[in-house]
Each structure stands twice: as structure tokens, then as C-alpha cells.
Length: 92
Picture (tube, rainbow, N blue to C red):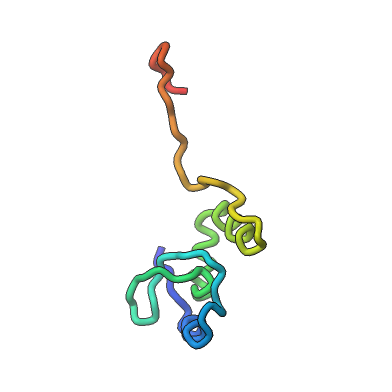
């Protein structure tokens, strides 16, 4: 997924620091083509749509964070953990 920063949003945020931020860091490409960490609010429209569509629970977490509820799903992107039972060696 090649996420890109909106140059207008980036410029406005540089002129008024913190004005276009929601506190969710994301890896994206700046207008010069360099990758870095930017706030989710700085993405261009197509990148934002791509990011939110890629993982529905991630999109729901974003809304939860914006509205002050925090993450609605903890560890939503981690695979399940399997443990071996000591008695018979089968997965649980």
C-alpha cells in the first residue's frame, strides 16, 4: 500500500503546527517522494480511502480514537496465539 501525503495539508500543518493532526502516526510518502512518519490526517483522499478500506477494524479504531474512546479493538491486527496442552500435546 503506497500511502501519500496531501501537499496542501502538509503545508498548512507546517504553517500552523498541530492544526491538521489527530495523533495517529502512519508511514507515508511526502510530496518529494520520501517516506516518513506522518499523521493520518495528512494523507490525500485516495490514500485515506485505501488505508481505511484495507482493514475494517482499523477504520473503526480510527473513529474510536477521533471520538475520544481510544482503540475499540485491542490487538486487532495480531494473529491468534496457539498453546500446546501439556497433557496430550494438542493445540488449543
